[in-house]
Length: 252
Image (tube, rainbow, N blue to C red):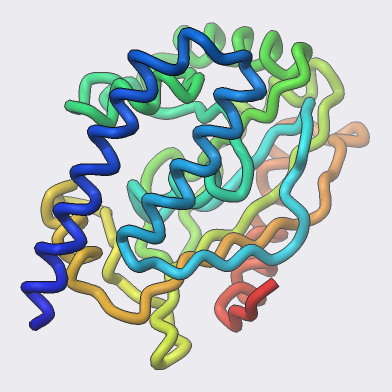
């Protein structure tokens, strides 16, 4: 029965992805940017529902920028989870741009792509982040630079925080967790770390039951004279604290 349920969910997900492509190519050219943003938010939440993932938000997601969101990184689902709480522009590795279907959708969402191994490209992306923040956008980054195991936080990279320092924009920390609601413990169903493939992670997610995605938003903070490395370390500490809270999810 679990496999049958997974196949049914997969069919719903594929249909929703194709509908997303239709919206991007046919409807988006006729919409204003705020209308596009709202469509993306609603679409992301609907996809979580089709995956049978309960979505729980703690704290207050920002409604307008300039704000830089800084989150831990667990899964390919993280972007959907944050989008479902409110549209933002992500900074993501350039590989995603070339993923079938998903690349088109993430590009339509205003994603800024970065070659993570290139310091020169990091400077270029920081420049575009500054432009986006100055325009009043909400921009999101994953300072770990890659996905973790959902339990421990990896070291935070500080480079992209320079955008918030440069224009004196706040950074709002987010702690993401995936929880098995039956046990209250961290779930590995959505894991996408190491040698795990996107297909394998998707199938594991489809087979899961009682899965919840928890996004816990902290209070926006300003640099107040901190350099980017000090600020990155402080944000890591704050996200670890928020994460401890998010492992005891409750509906908003």
